[in-house]
Image (cartoon, rainbow, N blue to C red; front, side):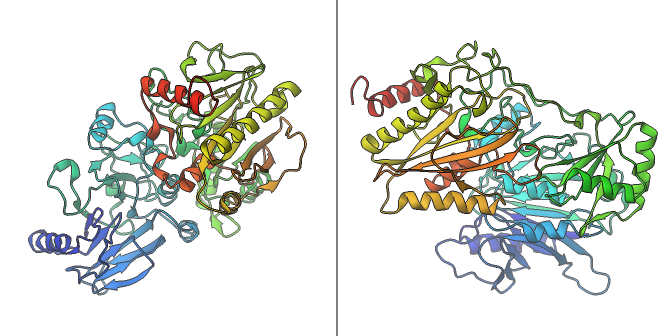
Length: 601
């Protein structure tokens, strides 16, 4: 067994933390390592020697002090038992900080024979970890200041899916929470690659004795290569499905958060919250009837033909191959159960590779087959943006024009965050007539002018259109004022969007003057940056065929970037900004007065 300690944010309390660790090491040790998640440094960067080998996720990789090592921003390593020698076991550890490339970790997970890691360390929580969590636990976390539906980061959730850890430890939120275990595979563990995971969040180190702020945790781990198979196959009675990995075709499974039935529209577009708070449905695996195989480890730019070709080289004969664009996994469909069983045996026994990546195969579900989207042109009673909907919260509407209306969103990024919405139901720009498209554009320009003249602000407006899982999408435009902070602000905003797109492996290109109306078969992200000094507008867009395997703007790309630009990354999710109805009515009145010039100043 490898014995480890994990603690939350140290924040410069080195002496208090190491004193407690030394006491535990003497009483219950010896421990092989201490891992510190969250912020490690305080104002004083002079770190004393640690009593046991200590690893942190703060700062550049390298030796920090005697017995203290910084792991860096993202990657994987192994930790040897302190006893050393030929019989020493090695613990596999993946780690991911809040920033930096994840390529090193992706490469490690793509190596042949990868079985997952023993431990994943992250500073923040993963986005979506709340899926399937009982209401009572959500309320308990809210009592200590953690709004779990709005907590966490997408990149950490992606790394949790990719690394398949047995334990995942995180800090930052100053709360102790041991989540119910979840399985990485769509069925109970059967191999060394399909173990379960336990997520544990920790409070800030050496600050409180409150059990809800517990900050240090001890665990004994028999590493994957050494552990008896029955140990890895053991599934606790409270084990559930993975909150991140959806073994069905979906645009962004990591964003499937609890109690949010309209989650597939843009984060800035959460115009109205869910009614009734439906719990997420547990996926049913049709193990006895499925004719679909799940394929993992694919290159993110893999296409259907490449997947089919590599399967046929291993004597599998699928009737269809389907890659999920940009996600690194796909599906193989077969005409019968017997054909699928034979193919699974053949593929699992062969060392199937695509490029330099080793592929993994398991049962998928028949329901993983893509469903055709349908967006009717008339008003939808189940569409939150249609004024004909009985769920329409009209107190958020700030004005109604001939073909479009304006409103404030639920959980705006800033007080004057507004939406421009066509009155008639439409799922893309191609469905808008000339009058509606013209009013959408002129309303955006008028609001940007008001932001410039009355709020002394720049403005950024954006739209994102792509197929969504829920099937009901109403096109709309977000427009958000950003305070001026010096010369060249607008140019820096443009550069921020261009750089962020490049990091996500898609391109934003300038759009020339004229009507911007992509075809119904295309998805698009378009952003307008209005200069608060000159009033000029610059437009950039990414337009792609909907069935392309290329990377595309993420579901929350626009709002995430603007939250960072405002210096308020904690407001990136609408749930973190939600207020009560009386406050919403106050914000609407203030918007009408200050931006639209109605009823006072």
